[in-house]
Length: 188
Image (cartoon, rainbow, N blue to C red):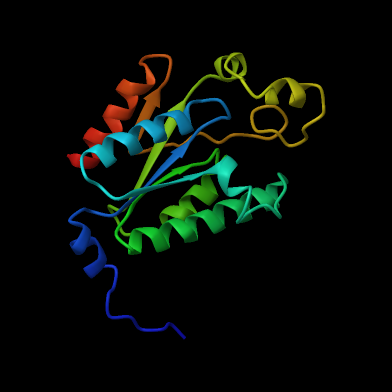
């Protein structure tokens, strides 16, 4: 049974004087998701908004440290993060979720937890060749050498969004300009 509460998902955002949202950044490893999400977070914070970043690397150190990178584990990874993001939006926050989230079905499942205008899918579109060139962690090289199995874009698929609210082509603009597009969308 759900425990009833008096300060609900209507009262909490009203107190923060903002519209809660889940802004879901998806794209290949090295696409710039975390960089852009961080810039959006800084801009929103400077404007007085209450935000929180859920980043794939960081969440795997705690909440999802028991999960690997099989398809089933990736699905559970996204399910858990979507549930946490929903709790945070219920608390009135703007939650910036930065996860590869390679499968359309799981992103759709996440979207289904939110109200019609609470979920904003942001496709950080970077060609695989560019993501590999930017690979500061050396993950693509390890995946190509067979040291990291099930790596998205190499031996595990990435299903690009078909109709995201925002499509950020990273070869066309710098991260600051792309972050500004997200902030403008949220404030618009």
